[in-house]
Image 1 (cartoon, rainbow, N blue to C red):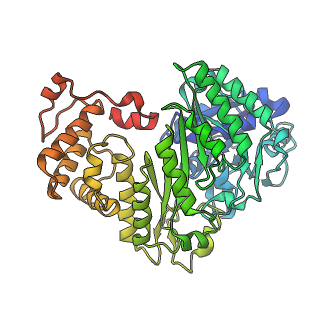
Image 2 (image 1 turned 180 degrees about the vertical axis):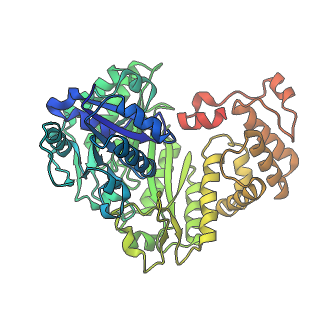
Length: 509
């Protein structure tokens, strides 16, 4: 039985916690006494505690994040009630700031803030030796990254084959965007390249194919980025039938020619780039300390869309201080014109410790006091309008980002994408009363009715949506067209083969 259990609740099974595995890899002589145990959001607190206690641990360490803090609080409360002798240690970004305001921190025995590897190892050793410290809160030591062991062997064979493997090429960020906790970093620190490449090779040898880099600024150091891209290209060329897939987050306005050449070499379905635009409004950028050359970012996005096979996932944030709906709409329409594969419309959140809070009074920022701390209103956007934007974001993900409506979406968006899609999101919510769990066929039917109501010819709307429906692989019944003759004629082929995993889940629905 392990003396130490490292636990967390992931948003989905596919997410394998990098934080827990990094902790175990750096436990030194205690590593073999530790076990990583993961759960998924929605698991019953009683069952989680039962599974934890079945291992008879002396110490349980929880990774706490914005998405799991509420449920983890209930689990910790239950664990301390039925097994008060088990030491509970918390770590993670959610408990690294504003500890005094958090019930979960009051319940736990110890909290490690910031970087955890060395400090947790030392704390765990003292607890297991029977000499626990009297101090409850421990600031995580930040060693040179060369001193940290990479978690190459902490992922199981099942993790490697069936889950996303998260990787760090660096920590920190040199930029100061105030909505992000990385604004608190002094700079970015790279992991030494040679050990990092050995780490990637080991993961690949063990069967990992889904690699997701968590770096905020992957392309900050071009030489390092090129070496990592070459690593993946070599393995794609060596095994085109079983290629790895890599996800990176890029700075949008920094794309030198050498990096372009490497990105252009990736075949379809092997590379995804997450690119944070967040806002095109230069005054808002100044307010939140975001440095971005909008013209260069736009040029780079256009080049990536036209000259590479990379799947482009681009982020915008609604509710930033100083930005009204008209400004956000202009930025959204500008981004739609660049044709990224996905636009992730995020609603501003007040992460604990993030400097965005300094604008609260000046711009009337009103945040949800409960996780995920989303913005509820500003001096430019009232509560009701912010709710509409939140529904817009969820509806956009359901329709546009899903990849299911390639033919019908242009008919819906026309020359005013934001205004016309907001109109549809409002209509869909009025008709269904929800923004999720909408039956697949009903979604197609509501979109068909909306297109007709907005003046699209019936034949054009019907043909586009029927083709989209068949291409998605769906085989139900639609109220506005008989699908059976098209099925018999083989008018469309399923689109699953070329979709990325997240879109495949949408398509299967």
